[in-house]
Structures are given as structure tokens and as C-alpha cells.
Amino acid sequence: MRLAVLSQSARIYSQMAQQEGFSVLAVDAFADNDTQQSATLVYHWPGLCGPDVNNEMSGLMEVLDSFKPDAVLLGSGFEADQAAYVKLFTRHAVFGNTPETVARVKNPQWLKIYCDAHGVQSPRIATQKPVEGRWLHKQAGQCGGMHVQDCSPAAIVTAKSYWQAFQPGQAVGILFVAHQQAFTLIGVHALKQRAGSYAYAGVKRLHDPGLTVAATELLQAVLPGLGLIGINSIDAIWHEGELHLIEVNPRLSASMRLYAGLPLTKAHMDSCNGNIMPLQQHTKTHACHCIAYARQEINASHLDFPDWLEDRPSGGMIAAGLPVCSLYAEGDSDREVLQALQDKKTRLEKLWGTYVCNRIEFNIH
Image 1 (tube, rainbow, N blue to C red):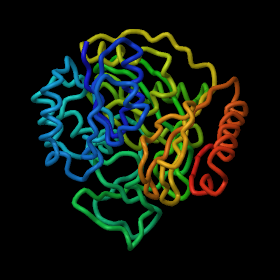
Image 2: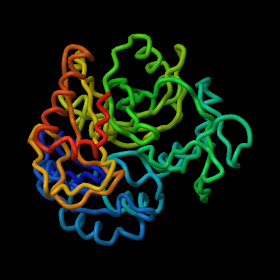
Image 3: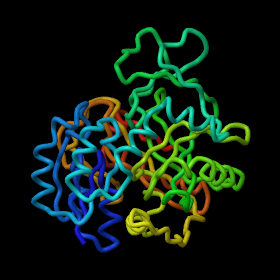
């Protein structure tokens, strides 16, 4: 079966699909070495990270028409451009949520009203810049956290701006596969953020029974009216024994990396065909996935990237603020995982030199 996987970073989805026996076209904004090795064909499409995806789609459609995928799977990149999503959904067999569902759950005001009506905690939403209290300035439909800022007079207000009251606590992600009211919880994990920002920097498995129960109860409360199918995720804040829903991500999630041993591609497609199949859980171990970002511009062509790194760039200049690569580790405890990640960083310092590594934020804390 031929799958097209479209995402700002398609590597993990392509690898998992390939492991499950699919032939994969990866449409990716970076086209790093790992993505190229995990797919039959790679289409490098920086438009996935652009402000107007719809105006950049002609080349993509030509590639998809030529590949003739049996199904199209989506990661990040299309939530902010409804016109592009509709165009893709109309022309190809997208296994995922309908454009109407995506538009609804990515509407901050609609989601807040829905949460209130279903007894789910969620921070207040404002459509005008608040004058009191601590608020976050966000852009509707965006992903990855780079668009999130503490509210300040310097914030640039756009047509998609909205404000969400700051909620203290631990940022967590809830990964699940759903079909209407039925669902299977895949896992709950801590969301790592870059120092001094809200940008996504990786995930770490959590083994808190109370949190797992709370996540299950949250899904039971919100899913019946959302109409979600396939694999999706929810961002939330875990604070004093309660979950506060922050955002729904109606698409494949990068947190799937923590559960790569499960047949998640098949689970996603089964759900989109109307079936929820039980997943055999193998997640008792601890694991962490960390995205390393460039603090300053780096020439990746001058560096050797060992095969135990992930998302290895194919060369060229990496601008400050962009991802360099990823590190992953598993173990029997958080301490063991942290030590394994520290060991990998030490090996990179020996390979690249501390001068280069000091220009990189590894996010392994």
C-alpha cells in the first residue's frame, strides 16, 4: 500500500509506516538524511512552514498525482490554512479528520465554550489584548509553540491573534487514537519546551497513575462531540491533581516517537476506516526524545552526524532558532535515561568540540 505522509517533519511517521510495510512518499520541510532513508520518495517542501500553504500547493499536487497514494496522512503544517486543507482533502484520500472538524477544534473560542459545557477545565480566552493578569499571546491554528509569547506591548497582533490566560503547572501531552466516542489512550508524556520560550523541544514518558486516570476522564468528557478520528493529541497542563485543556491537535503527533514499537500507522488507518483496534502496550520503560536547536548559526556540512542521532541534517547552514538534530534514549528509570542523554552529549562534545556544542541547545534536562 502506498502512503503519502505530509508534515513539517515527517521522519518519525515515515519510519513507522516503513516498518509496518508501507511504501512511503514523505513530504517534509527539511528532507533530512533520516527522512530520505525512511521513504521510497521524498519531496522537500519548505512551504509546510510558510505562512500561506495554499499558495504553495501546485508543486505538491503534481508530486501527489504522480505518486498516486492509496492514502494521505498528515502531521503538522496544515492546521493554519483551511483552504489548503480543503484542497488536499477534496483531491486525495486523506486518512484523518475532516476540514470541518479541524476548523472547529482549532477555533480557540469554540473550544473554550465546548470545554465549559462539558465540565473540562481550560484557561480563559480573550480576543482583545487583556490589560490585567498574566496572559499568553497566540496565533490560531499554529503549532510547535514558536508562535506563543508572554503578552507584552511589543507583541505583533494579527488577524489570527488571541490571548489565553496563563495556567501554571506541568505541560503534558495526551496521545490517543479515536473514532467518534470510542478511543484508546496510547500514552501521557511531559512536553519539553526550549529555555525561555514555549517552543516544542521534545517529550518524555510519564508514569503517574493519577495523571493517566485524569487523562482518561478528560478524553471521556471531550471526545463525544469533537468528531475526531485516527491518532490525535491534546496539550494540557497538570496542576494540583487537575488537567487543564490547552489545545487539541487533530493530526499525527511528534510524540508518537515515544511509542514507535506499536503499530500506530495501522491503528490510525483502522480508526479512519471505522475500527478501533486494541493496542498491545509496551511502554513500561522510561524514554525521552529531545530536539536540539541552534543557538547561533551552524554549518552542518562541517559536522559528522553519528547514526545514533535522529533527524540528521543533510548539510548546509542552520540558522539560529532552527532544529539541528534529535536525541533519544530509553531506560528503566528517568535517571538512567537522563544519563544516557548526557553521555550522548559528551560524545558529541568530543566529536564536534565544546565550541560548536555551546552553540547548540540540547534540551536534555
